[in-house]
Image (cartoon, rainbow, N blue to C red; front, side):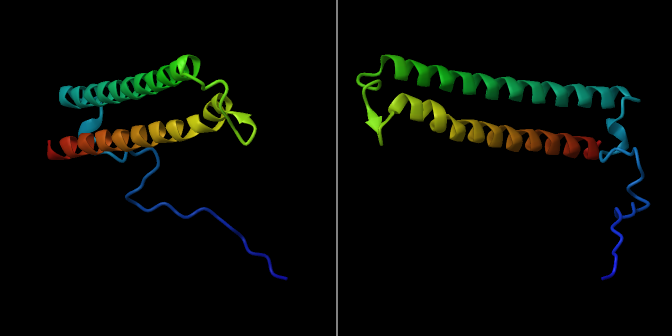
Length: 120
C-alpha cells in the first residue's frame, strides 16, 4: 500500500493572498469607491429587509389561516392534524424559497456593483 500526500493547490501569481476579487476602485481610498461600497451595502440591507418582511408576512397569514380557517383544527391527514403538518413540514419550502430568492438577488446586486466598478 502506498501513501499519497494531499496538499492544497498552489496559488497563482494573480491570486495573491489578501487581494480583493474586485477592481482597485472598490477600495475606500477614493470618494467614488466609498460611494460604491455604501451603495452596495444599502442595496443588500434593503434586500434583506424585504425578504425578511415578506417571509414574516407569509408566516403571519399562515398562522391566521390556521387559527381562523374553518375546520382546519379538525382536519387530519394520515391521523396527523393539518395544522401540525403545515407548521412542521409545510413551512420548510417557504424557508428554502426565501433563501434561494435572497441568494439570487444578492448575487445580482454584487454583479451590478462589479460592473459599475469595472466601468469606472
